Length: 117
Image (cartoon, rainbow, N blue to C red; front, side, top):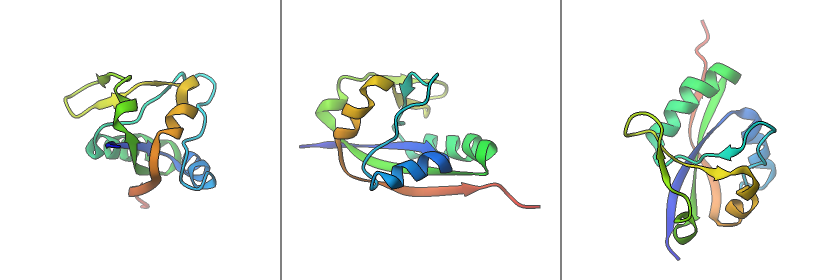
């Protein structure tokens, strides 16, 4: 089976839920979050973690994980800004199935914290 590397920027609350899953699953989306969006490159994930998650919760993390490439063909690549802003849109109701297609464990590859004056 071939896999594709994906990334997901997360804050501390989501990271704790990933840790609680044994580093195997992303938590269900909250009400009002109809889409789970893994991103296609680490640069974009770091930008979100640094610029959004740190602002919202004081720290942000970039996770990396592998997903079955054949399964991912059902989701089209979305570009939501510049060319680096590539992501997949997975309907929240399909997240459980998406999690079952993760190969191996979810890992942290970068972390960011707010600067202390």
